[in-house]
Length: 146
Image (tube, rainbow, N blue to C red):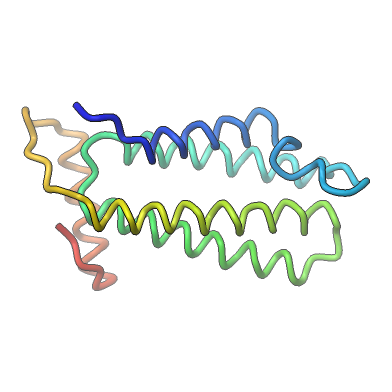
């Protein structure tokens, strides 16, 4: 089985955000991350770890496309937070999230373009459920799938 470098990178970044959120967004300027911002960053780190686990093994084009959707929505909401927040800590964390969400979205689009259909070596209930759910969501949102 080939290594899914994108999922591995997302998991590594998620682990850093979960365990050391200040390393991601806390060392810009003189202001430390607030406790609330640090907690929000840790929740994001956990989400990135879950996302990478769900998408790590033989992702379909549709699964990867849904990652793009998640990254774009996340980047857009964080851009809004960066613009309207009155907290330096929150603005900094949001700006860091905008940049990483954009980077992951670009990497996901590149992964879609070079994706080759993976034949399943053996039936797997979890992957089958994931792929069927992703296909339904892609059809619902009119995203080209497999």
